[in-house]
Amino acid sequence: MIVGGLLAWQLFPTQPVFIDGRTEAYPEALFASYFGVIDHPQQWPALASQYAFDYALLDHTALDRWPLARYLSSEHGWTLVYHDETAALFLPTDDPHRAMRERAERAFTAVGADRRDAPLRPEPGLVRRTVAFPVTELQIAIGYGDFLRFIGRPVDAVRAYRQALVLDPDSPDVRLALGGAYWSAGHRDQATEESRDILRRDPTFERAAQALGEAGAQRK
Image 1: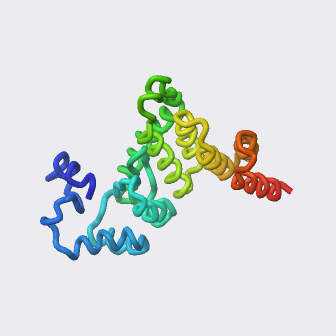
Image 2: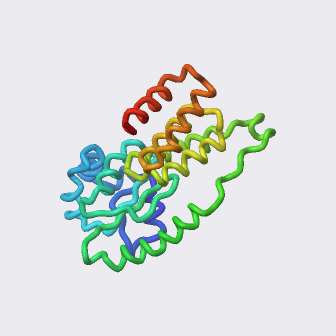
Image 3: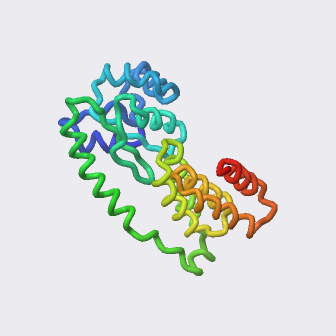
């Protein structure tokens, strides 16, 4: 509903869209199907078969889309080929979509490599931080990291949380989330160091102490 209108404007009539924000243009039953599959991702195969979707584009800034994104990322006949700070793109893994999928994977693999190699955005200057703290940028970075961890992409989540720490280096919550992403990605030393760093700054931060204790128990 969020980007369907833009897609229709740019792609119609060669590519029709499933839904857009014009609530008056669609029957109530279609909206029931749309929100039903968001609330119950296991309904996706039936809906995808009915409408013969070629791809699925989800705005993951809306938390209610996360379960469907995780479902599509988990070997249910679809695969994630692209993601950024606001959207995730999925393609079918069947043979009819092979050429499209391979073309997308080649293109977006290059995009992803360039993104990983690029330096983090610089820390806001003192004047900017004094006048206006970058709340929106920080929320986007944290939300992106949380989404990536939710769908099982901890390596990508690490970069998102590191960007959030550039914006707010004193946030124990972001540093704890970064440690969790490091741990899930298999970087155990970096994970425990983040918890230790939090406790050096604030010895009373119980969640960091708990994470450090659990890390020590799992290492034994």
